[in-house]
Image (cartoon, rainbow, N blue to C red; front, side, top):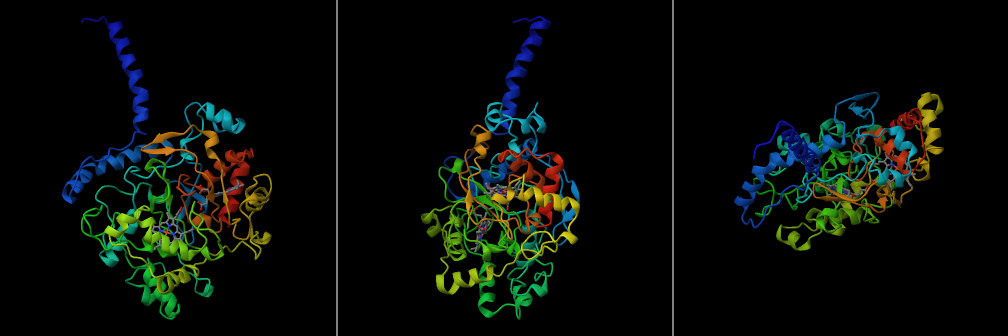
Length: 461
Ligand code: HEC
Ligand code: HEC
């Protein structure tokens, strides 16, 4: 068929119009899953060949949602000096400004599809597959110290390192505040724990630490042919994620929810301050550190699948001789020092800046943060349903349903500047993002100057 130039142009425009939304939707398309593969060699071949595709797919999603540039804040650093990232990083949808959003009701924002995607649930780097993923710097340090390989053949961790906690994090003991950072700037492993802690911990606590540093089989890291590491593996350790009792930002999927696409990505919380907390896990609300310790290895390590756990060599820690030792050590892990806070957890006026003091007044006043985050640890030790789904229509992103989260544990804000990214799934990259997010969720209408003051206050906690 012959067409004149106008007809051709029209056809091109039409094709472009059809392709544009499809390309946009492509970023949120579910990654491929293997069908009918059996045997380790086939599985390894299939996944290894697609590792780059999986990584790049997730990178495109992050690019669409966030400004990922490395921009350090002029003020505030983590305990050992790593810079805190500056600014709201969630990107706005086209044609909307933050001023528009501040004026709209949740219903209007939902109807106009104007909620920033960076404020919606974040999928796992390969959501249909899931499993534990460790940041590069941790994989390298463990390889160096122990010769253990935590690298998966199918997938890499996704967030850039400047959005992660400093590595390794400092470690503080409630029993020996005089010692400061007891890790002495090193990643505590089986290789060095005895040398570092003999004479600082009692024998029971030392044994607890040993167990927290000992690898045990897990879904992707085990010695069967159903694994995602090249060589058979002894497994993972508690401190492979809760590095030095803090966190390195490692991620996996919560074990509790079905089907797979409704499961939450979860970002490792620091274990600092578990001694003053009452609920454990973002959703399960287990009532003791002992219960959580037992449940991690027995169930969470295997996605809550007790049959796979048996096949892969689950280690069931003995409640009296192992779980108690591990819990006792965890209950010694303290928050980092906050030199500007008094004994009641409020700013000491003589030490605080005007911005921090204004931020404190807002935190307890107009911004309503203290309704839930109560001093001195800035938690009320319960769960809250923030109902962020008021602002968006549920939809799928890379194989995950962005749906209602339900009630989530109110994590403490003491030491919060040291543990980015934020929320249970790590969807908020900076403290500025958290203030903007809560400003919308709580409909408090803070001005940008007021938001900056609240951020300044949180850096002092
Ligand atoms: C893949 C990384 C990873 C490993 C390995 C891991 N954890 Fe966790 N841990 C997490 C994540 C993620 C959460 C949050 C769970 C949730 O949101 O339900 C968590 C939560 C916890 C909590 C509750 C913290 C809180 O503030 O509610 C405790 C206690 C805990 N882990 C202890 C352990 C112990 C003990 C081990 C070893 C047996 C272990 N973890 C191994 C990632 C890990
Ligand atoms: C209605 C109760 C409530 C109010 C009010 C509230 N928060 Fe929260 N906050 C929560 C809950 C619940 C979470 C955990 C949510 C999640 O992980 O999905 C949380 C999480 C956070 C986190 C991330 C913690 C972490 O470890 O990742 C920060 C930071 C935070 N809130 C700051 C604020 C600020 C600032 C305000 C006021 C502007 C505020 N919150 C108001 C309940 C509240």
